[in-house]
Length: 212
Figure 1 (tube, rainbow, N blue to C red):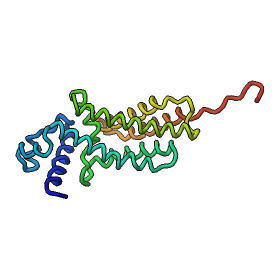
Figure 2: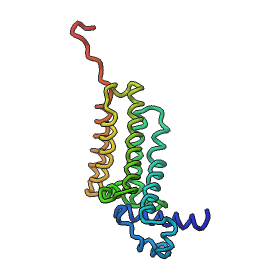
Figure 3: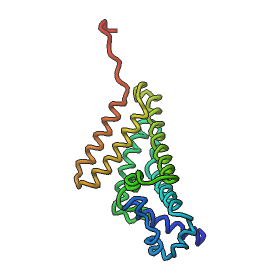
């Protein structure tokens, strides 16, 4: 890796740590310059603008989320097992983001912190974040459609609503577990996930009155 690329990587990781704690608007060019040993102008030479740096941070989180959560889920063969894997690996994503000494992990879920200030963002950054969340929803929808095609989920399932409910569940779980030190939330989240799968499952045929 060239020196310039190494410097760029160091800036992105430092910015990701800041965004995880304070959101994308919490990225301070001055603080990053001090942390990385660069001048503000030297830092801007690598990205051109704070906006471009914010997008690079979102892309880094998206790529990492894909490696840890999405790709392992897609390795499963059935639709339901892909959904189960996604839910389980999201829990791993949260766990690995807390107190993990490995490079690239910082306390809390970066997506959650970024979403908290997304309403304040405008222009290319908001558009980029919206595109990534849309991709996540479409990925969950494809998993649900696969379960429908396999006969595990009922044919009349609203897969878009199912995807919305699942994504809302995992982000809601993250919110409560960050605010409250209570292990019950993990149990409730797992139960709520099972309820989603049960509700989406194909309903058994109702026998007619004449026994046919």
